[in-house]
Amino acid sequence: MSGFSNWVTTNQEGEERGPIFVPDGHVISGVEVKEQAGFGITDIRLHFRKHNDDTGGVTQVTGWLTNGNHHWIKDEYLPNDKLVIGIQGKEQAGFGLVDVRMIYKNDNGSATSALFSEWVTKNPVDGHVTDALVPDGTYTFGIEGREQAGFGIVNLRLVY
Image 1 (cartoon, rainbow, N blue to C red):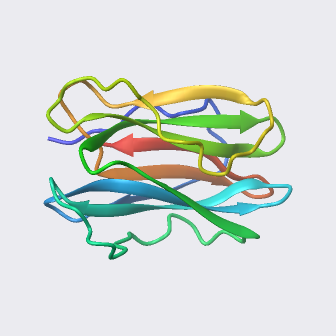
Image 2 (image 1 turned 30 degrees about the horizontal axis):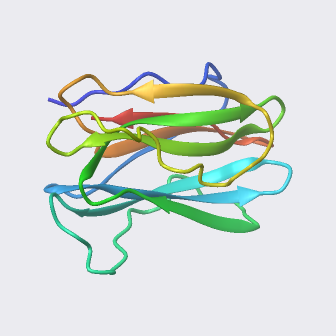
């Protein structure tokens, strides 16, 4: 059975994009975003690996969620023994999502002392920070978003 997490922001403007998924038998190993000056995050895609396996340095990625313009492409990866259970977003009024980071747990289900990856864009703006989490005992294998013209990605939620 699969389902959706809560949305990371309250913005329901724009159009839904996705969802995109990692292949069966694989887990998310990282996230990559396109960032555009004046717009924030304009696109996102997932990196993946086989469960309990290393990618061996080979990049395995999903397609992009939108067709967003960009100035920079930035990424962040998880340690191989972690599973994504959420995403945290930083929202700036008038710009949509300007940064994201993954929330994770140990792949054996136990808690970890470090709950978050690094912020992907490293945007220094003090924006509104909120989480989207999947239910206990599940893990994430996809992502869906909302894209608003003139603002880029304004909302995200996870598929579990």
